[in-house]
Every structure is written in C-alpha cells, then in structure tokens.
Image 1 (cartoon, rainbow, N blue to C red):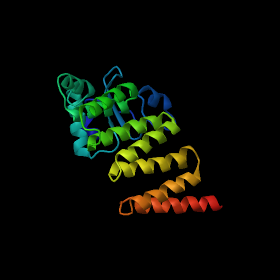
Image 2: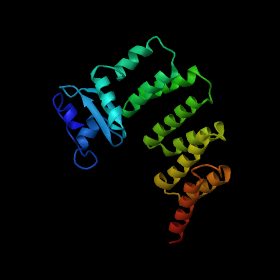
Image 3: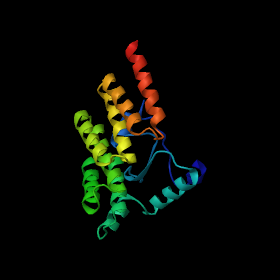
Length: 212
C-alpha cells in the first residue's frame, strides 16, 4: 500500500499515545488508528478513523485527493439538502476532528428533521451522550444515557445506554457497586442480547474484585 502512494506523498507515522502528543493535539486525534491526510502545508484534507480494508482505504484516500467525500464536499452538498444521513456524515467528521460545537449542531439538525425515536435518532442521541462523556461530565452523561434507555427501551439503543452507564460507574466514577447493579440489570432486562454474557462476566469480575 505504501508503494502505491510513495510517488505522490510523504508518509509520517507517529505514536501519538507515547512520544508525539503534539501531533495528536494539533490534529485533535482522539482515537487510534487515525489516518490524517494533509496538503503540502500540513492543512488537513480529511481523515480516516479506525481500521479499513486495503481496497476501500485506497479508494477513500484517492477520493479525498480529488475532493470527493471530504468535509468541504459534504458541506457543499448539504447547502440545499434535507438528507439526514448527509447531516450525520458531516457531524461525524466534525466530531473526529475536534469540532464538538459543529458536530452537536449537525446532530441536532438530524433530530429536528426526523422522528424522535427512529434508528438514526438513536444513533445521534448515543453520539451526543458520548460527547458529554468524553468531556468528562460524568453525571450529565449518566443522565443522558438514562433518558436514552427510557426512550429506546427494548431496542439496541436501550441496551447500549445501560452498558454505557455501567462503564461510567466502573471506569470513571469507581463505583463498583453501582456498576455491578447496572450489569445485572442489563442481563435481567435483555437476557437474549448478544451482550448478556459479557455483562454477566463483568458483574462476576467486579464482584471478585470487591471481595479481595
């Protein structure tokens, strides 16, 4: 893959988690792996967050180099569009490049343009609550996920909301008792979920830690 691009660009590999936090800060990198495509001046063209198979990766990079699918391209298309999925793509791009306010604005446009409890609304509300969590507003995040749990009860979004609450209690607030309670509640309310075994094991694991 590197050979494919070697005549057209310079590759820079940075371990931002250890030695190159300035690069991560400059480009607002919040997760790994992140591939940031820039111009010769270091200005971002766009980015790919997470893993992607070689074929789709090469296609995406080539599209970005031609101005296809970039944030600027999507914003131009959105100027006269009511496509909620287009709004979602824009919000996601802003979120992953550190534009929290812009991401929130586009997420809220999605909610304003559709049904309050359809599947896209569920995705958006989870994303908004996750932004609150990433901002380290843990009590507010718990409240957001609690609302999602009620509004989307019996759906995958309701499931996700409980697991997020358990995660916050366990990893952010160090409240093992409440984390165990959330995992056990998940299993009780969603016994047939593909995550039921995971929640059961987490509850057992935390109980073992509490007894030590």
